[in-house]
Image 1 (cartoon, rainbow, N blue to C red):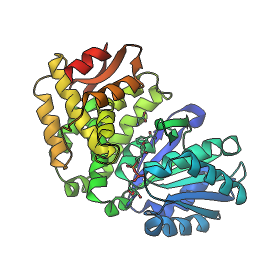
Image 2 (cartoon, rainbow, N blue to C red):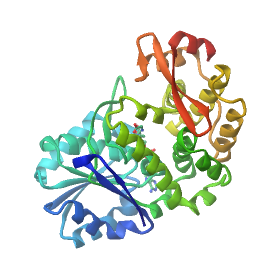
Image 3 (cartoon, rainbow, N blue to C red):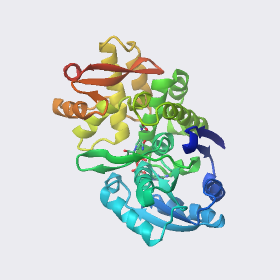
Length: 353
Ligand code: NAD
Ligand code: GLY
């Protein structure tokens, strides 16, 4: 098992990465929640039949009473209706302020359960047990929790750091290939923005089997980069924006496909490739970089270009959180392994696209 510590003073926590960790979850949770009697376990309809029982056995073995709540799998569950349902169920249990909420699943379960934990009884302890590659390398670390609104994704949320992140690499075995590839888009992103050596390591392993053979160091490297970024900018006012490499244009592609044609990972992959090409046009990104990034993405079956109308680009650029009035800070690669924010007029970016 590998362990990382996210150092955020009183909100510090450990990330445990390894094979077979679900079986030892009870002891690990007990160590961080010594006074808890009850645990409210949130999972989804795909993950529950695969892993909930094993986790519950370990938790009850450590003396916890466990209440399980299963949400329908999919992004549409990350909504205010499900959040309200969770609050009511938590009070029925009843959960008290010394108890805790556990998320077992992908980013949808983690974001929803985390927001419920942040708000119920004005905040109770929260444990992340991520089971998708995307959740393990990104959403379970850093404390962003949210639900979607009609106006857009993640528009109601909070920063609520978990007490522990426990990632059992065995759970990745049951992921569909396309869901695994979605997570790989974010894995490749870390290499692009922060670690050239890691990018080359990934390029030399262009298949799911080769990545899985090295999954512990892959997860460790990604979580370590995210840890550093979160420690220096917990509230997302500066450096944390670099994690959005590929996401501004990715949002345009998600919109172009009405959030159905393209998954988030596919859209981010094409967004990173497009940001590399824009960077070359602006004289910021070296000309050989787009080809190298496209090769790494394509090897995992990820798209490197998605057709997109100007309206969709305009909507995504206009709404981007890195926008300041008429300008936007687009995240570009100064070189492979080093991302920078590049402030430019939104209109100029739209012309380029
Ligand atoms: P997801 O949670 O919908 O999971 C994808 C699919 O995989 C679902 O059908 C799920 O049921 C299934 N699944 C999960 N684990 C499985 C397993 N081990 N075996 C088989 N199937 C499994 O999606 P995701 O890609 O994990 O997360 C996407 C969400 O994460 C989005 O809502 C996004 O906004 C959010 N997100 C949040 C952050 C953050 O910092 N909080 C960062 C990135 C993304
Ligand atoms: N996933 C982006 C962030 O955590 O800031």
